Length: 443
Image 1 (cartoon, one colour):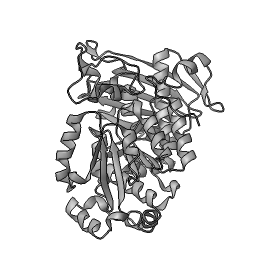
Image 2 (image 1 turned 60 degrees about the vertical axis):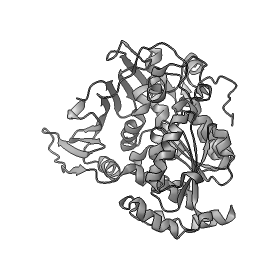
Image 3 (image 1 turned 60 degrees about the horizontal axis):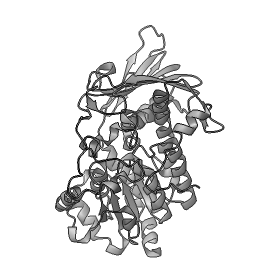
Image 4 (image 1 turned 90 degrees about the vertical axis):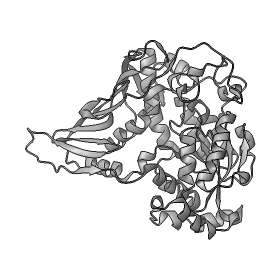
């Protein structure tokens, strides 16, 4: 391992030096890899490879010197599909080890980095175990499925001193960073309200279907892991896990951590003083879901309010966009989303503001991986675009909104104690209860 680490540190400039990696195709990357001895490549193993887990694999393999050596999933059909997909990535499937249990993957000594692309309820446990095993980690968002899990994940990173990047790839897109710079320039004037919205017309839960036997090749007990034991149901599985509290937190944690993140960044915001939420299952009352498909949440900060507004089954969100962040100031409003940003001038203001119209031009996921690999090599933690601390911060804010909705109360947060002022709420919601013999480490 010393030879590998020495190489990783010495070759950090391949990424950190500004190389436009996303502009190369896989054949171009193969040229770089051929110049790097196999023993000096950065080896990755991926746990959970159906959705974003596999998107992360493909992005990682675009970075020179990165090599896929292991995959893990509880669904054999997903593994079979990904083994077939490896040919498209110029990867020899015979050199990729296959696992159904993540702990076996962690035992593979030549793995440097673990990708966690599982359902949310697995993130904390796999991340803490990976750090304990001496691996660096790229963990999908939201990093934790409860506020307590987020705190434990931070503690694990600090104890084992591992590089941990949260998968909030918008942090690596230039137009998002430029928009925040504009917001913080003061040109918008006093910003009193930040609106964050997510209207997703294509998203909907599964139909109400009876429980059944798991599909052939699915280890459903392993999929449940620390979640409560229950029978298999097709409308709670794979993509639809998002709509059930045992495994996730609905749109608030699925898209919210991306969008709330930039609302908070623009305002340099910490934690809110109070949180209130209203919503329900209004779009799909006859389909199988627990999380609200319609939700409005109000966060009170010292000098501004932040409003979260989400709806499934509708695309026509604020300002004619299906998602975005609006910083509403006395001189103008900056509207930001994945497509770019623009300024709407406040007509009554005497302080005129420039009105750029900016379009996104880069690939945030690719750049996020370039950043992560550069830090794995350099060990300069401060260079991470989204550390576990930052990922945990926005995940905590999102969890606050969900907890306010579930309690039906206006909640107050004690920043000094890092908990709600209502101890009954803390006891019920601050930390997820673990089941089936699983236990999250206590640091």
